[in-house]
Image (tube, rainbow, N blue to C red; front, top):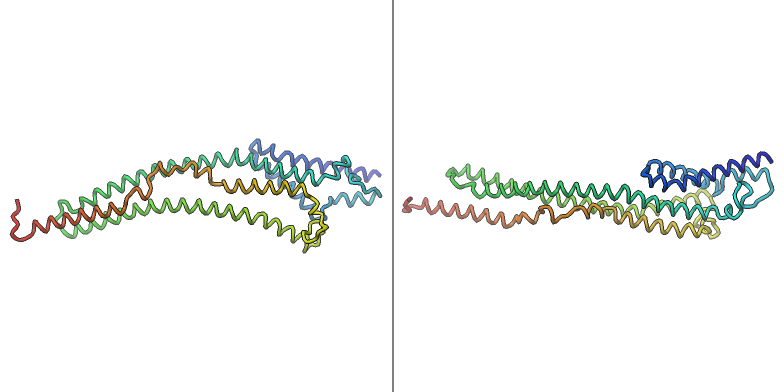
Length: 303
């Protein structure tokens, strides 16, 4: 009898510790101690792993069964019978709710403020840097127009013209590269988020399938209609809600950055009007060439 009492006391203490960890996760997250929340989550997952390896039962239940013939829901723990009967359903639903609360806390207190700040910093950088590039582009354009003014050496004219044209194209390419790189990064983040949305639930289901079918754990075998896993109806409802919240957060993972990046505030590639710039330069060179041809034509008197 003393051994059974000791087992029930230890089992109750472990249950209380696990329940405390589950309830404390969002509280610790609210205090922005997310490393601590992660530690508590790991502890809960370890306990869940122990239960899974023992066919969904606490190992102390089997030990307590050796010392009593009673098989009530609370024969191995000091809990009310109604709570012991609904322990898995209650804490399964509670874990999902607190998981959603922890995600919301992290999203609102850590992720979104930092992402907004990153977006503002990126927007300020792009505004300053691209404005400087735009000024350099117009300066190069002005120098390119005057490349042959005052020059009579053909080789010097050719060298300067080629240099300014290459410089113009290189600056324009930098505009195009920055815009393309930014859009590609955003696309990759959204794409990877969609992968996580699919892969995480799939990996969870594959793990359950492997544990239940190949490891012969009938309690979680999704291929058996009488499996205990189909009796956790409340858990699945809350787990579906948890997945929907998870989907919403992933879908909006870059929305804060995109809201902070205001493209209308910084110069873009199309503002360079590259086609018009090149056409204007070619017209300028053509006019200069025509002018000098007219001046050098025999019979034309210089003033």
